[in-house]
Amino acid sequence: MVASAIFITDLTGKPLISRNYRGDIPLTSAIEKFASYLVEVEDDDKKPVFHVDGNGEVVVETEDVGSTGPGGETFVYVQHNNLYLCGVTCKNSNVALIVTFLYKLAGVFKD
Image 1 (cartoon, rainbow, N blue to C red):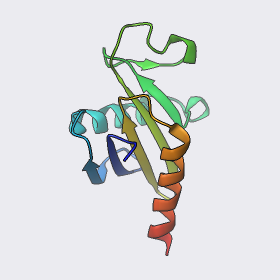
Image 2 (image 1 turned 90 degrees about the vertical axis):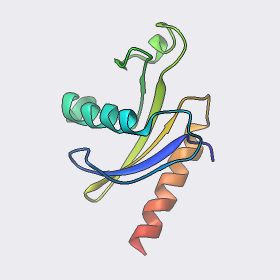
Image 3 (image 1 turned 120 degrees about the horizontal axis):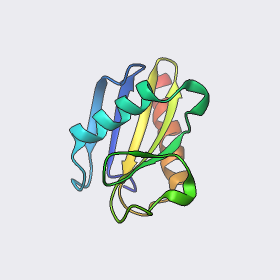
């Protein structure tokens, strides 16, 4: 699995289903960071891929990723109906593969 963890939340960020594959990130704090991103960032400024640095702050500009030092998590999410499907990784993972997996997962739930 490319992602460290996968979880599904409602529109407010409340977790419904979660799975921690690698165990290299604390799942509860990752879900809290994602929920705070959903609440704090305006709808027009939300991006399907964002990075949270080691201090817990959302990195807005892509050139600033890694400028605060090593660490942090990268969040990749898709919205399907009233759900967010989110993958989290702390490694240099292929984001396109995570997005493809999330869309395939949404297709499984649709069928």
